[in-house]
Length: 118
Image (cartoon, rainbow, N blue to C red; front, top):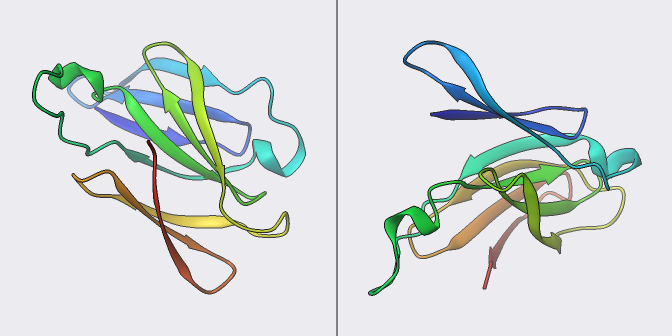
């Protein structure tokens, strides 16, 4: 599977075996620059003991051109959480998520932030 982010507030989930779009998620509450998704990355968090491996399989995080990070559950087509990662004039361009749940965020503020979704 692969995910792509759009400038129209959508995330598309792609099946790479047959090259088709399998799922479309739209953030209907987003307006203006908050609707411009700049990047997307799949969740790499390893489930803790007693948790299902599927708990994180459908989670992605996107960065917007309004400096907001959104945690999205693709299976539920729902924004689960948001984090303000910069000023309103900040665009989030680079994202990477490690297996400990730490998210590296690169933006037009010329720094890298490290955040953790709890």
